[in-house]
Length: 484
Image (cartoon, rainbow, N blue to C red; front, side, top):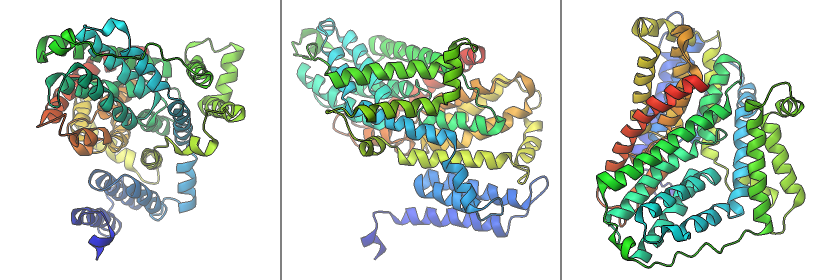
């Protein structure tokens, strides 16, 4: 009967039962050992159960279950827990930026940029320039829309370009471009520090240290360097390692029209206003603090600036634009929102003296980390993060490793650059491209067996995950320690 009513497999319900049993055991049978309090041991049980649910079941209902159970474990009331979760400034920022993304997506800005890039005459007969331009197209897609929407736009684009030049499904060049573009897209998606991944990671920092002083300009600078290095590595691999047959491009005469595409008035406003928005968001991080405009923008905060942008767009009410309802629904990543709400609430609960969790973790980690440098700590935790994010949901991984890094980092003393460590975790944990559960993007790629046959997705995924770990350790943590 249940099989007829639900799409879920029996394993799904078994994992659900295990998650619930974890909570029951910690509520009833696991004793609290000092410095953990009875509330603290229950919170740990809830945290473990939510992580288990995120990995093996879903991200929405375990998140909601976690918030409900936090309101029933003796920590606080359900009303106050939900108010804290939904009223968190980072959660609000995520909602607002999803609305901004909806405005960009509806205007077709990504399609315009891709048509311009691929339609340039400079790519005719130049296979590596065409490959480079397609990587830039994927960068543009990920800056303007969600990561899932980006791959769903990029994949058919590459197929169409390949067909125009005479490539067939399963040929090495389209395989390389699709999978390398997916890697580059993941790097580009983290360039803007206002999306779901940065929201989870930097939100944990705010919850733990009580300050919101992350330098967004430094984040963008480090992310840009990593992105540029990643594109360079991809082009090197294409030219000297994988060496896909590019003869069809050298000899082809494909008609890549697009150079004559023009922006409409609505599109011009959206593109220009988005660039202005980015300047306003980054201004407080780079301009002198005593300037009037800097003080004004600091008072508005990031959320105020985003709300003003959305408000102006709604006020103008473009004939070719979308309405307020569509703005709030079109690109809203509800699963990411629920994960963010729960993970940041958990981070705040961990900090509470009523649980004793922070003291317990510190006492447990001090002997292990004694005499270890910050670099060794970062190398270990990011490598573990790389493994976990490729077998679990990316956001769930970030939600687990961010508070863990903050907690352990506190035991290392003053030589730790926590923003740089969290940035490194973000750049590692946001790249899940080996197994289908790692991300929606990877699950989508595994389903495209015609153009991506055999185990090529996993092969490329392992290669790029290891490359990413090395790049992040050298450029992410190294440069981040200087700039943040």
